[in-house]
Image (tube, rainbow, N blue to C red; front, side, top):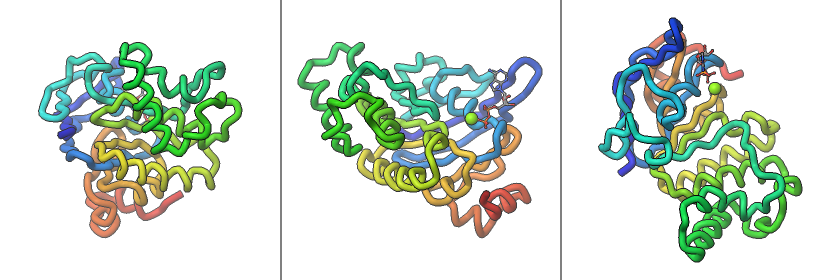
Length: 238
Ligand code: ADP
Ligand code: MG
């Protein structure tokens, strides 16, 4: 069970308070989107969940276990970033296998995991190519493959599509929604794009100025916005 609970997370950088008392209960296998304007604290919150940034106070519980002080690699979490640095000199196979190389897995285990990830991401016939021979969308899929092979309990995505053009972004939205179904994993997806949030999420967290404005289904937010901000933000996609 990969439930994800955030309890009263606060974060300050020096005297600047960027997250205010964030508490959220995310269910096992949910696809939750954090949406909000640039600078509202989305990446900081995600990085705190991943363990790449320390909260000023508050706790993070994954699958019932308090991981607040756990090392990032021990949290059962994998994060996909906006700028995905692939190794240009390595094949797609080796790029996907990379996180496993340090884990000393049996060769057959490693190969099985890479092949499964490649199948899910439709990269099976690309495994021998180098990143430079791939399209932008295929490269992003390789980056996601690197997350999948680690078999995390929770996937975190920080604006993974924002470097792609509009058409490709549309395709990748569908692919990621499908991926969520195939993997049956808990996913937290950060975006500033309301359309992405509305079309992909089981539930949406609207953040503004480091505070949760509302947490609910796309329809709840659309039909029953709790605040003026939510009404205008969800009502006026850009
Ligand atoms: P978002 O991802 O929603 O655009 P961020 O989480 O990146 O927002 O940033 C939230 C706020 O925290 C911003 O005001 C940003 O300038 C500030 N911030 C983020 N990281 C740091 C840091 N390492 N040091 C100081 N301020 C930071
Ligand atoms: Mg960000």
